[in-house]
Image 1 (cartoon, rainbow, N blue to C red):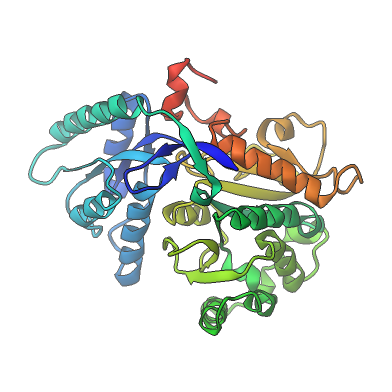
Image 2 (image 1 turned 30 degrees about the horizontal axis):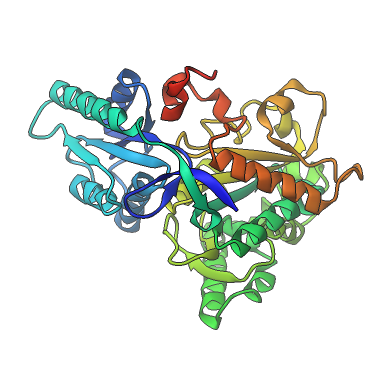
Length: 400
């Protein structure tokens, strides 16, 4: 099977075609936002990163920003900074340039704000002029990488949306593609089951190490994760223990062998299923997976009030403007609710109603993945501000 994507110089294929304006830290966010506001067809990636962080945090920030710039959905980048950030702006630009895409690095230090703003606008306009001429072409599914997260989990998550997404993962991996999942805390109590799927003892060891390390960090604060998980909303939705929640979360990974364990925002080497050691916080997780190179993110929402709340993380800007998010709801609170129709791409409650099997819903999600990879807008993308729309949308006029 194939999707229609954009060819990148490094041999990858993008499902969106953005010119990204990347800030090297919080102090340069205004500068990046002003460039984006002036140039139609660009998107701003604005990190909430300050210079008081140390050591590994700085390395992770640099790795994440490089990864976002290298994401296949980004065609070219303007990188802006003050010039005194802990994130090395030269290293940031050089790291993105390894993907062979056009990169322009600009800093205020040694120049001035207005000059850098003007240069950034000019560079962005030139990149948009080149990028908007690109055309989609066929690629096989081995070029595609999916990410996933579950949220607002309830008793239906582990028997509806999550296992359906797991089958999508298995099907894509069988086609030669890749999938990444994270949320380390939601493996506690079920780690041994995932470890059995590891391709080697070393991968299994690293998996246990990541989960044990996360639990130890929590206990070092004097708290126990079992005191906060499941959350009150999870409990109201029918979940009773952390182990039960973890089993449901594990269902979204499918049954494919676990090829490796990644650090936060680390790009996988090879194809197949990978676990990323990371946060369960939605925006942080999606950012890390995007930095690791995913093309599309699947967001599984159990239901309840979250399924009819506009602030639900399935909607931009809960995700990233470079990353389409396919939202799946397992058990919507009000089937006729306007918000649910407006923000969810796949309703999986048909499984509970006995109208469809898990395999049938999985097939619907899989077909949606191919359609979105080929240019179809997700429901959340339809709520992105017009200046953040993919460049191809301007060929025929605004979609919103």
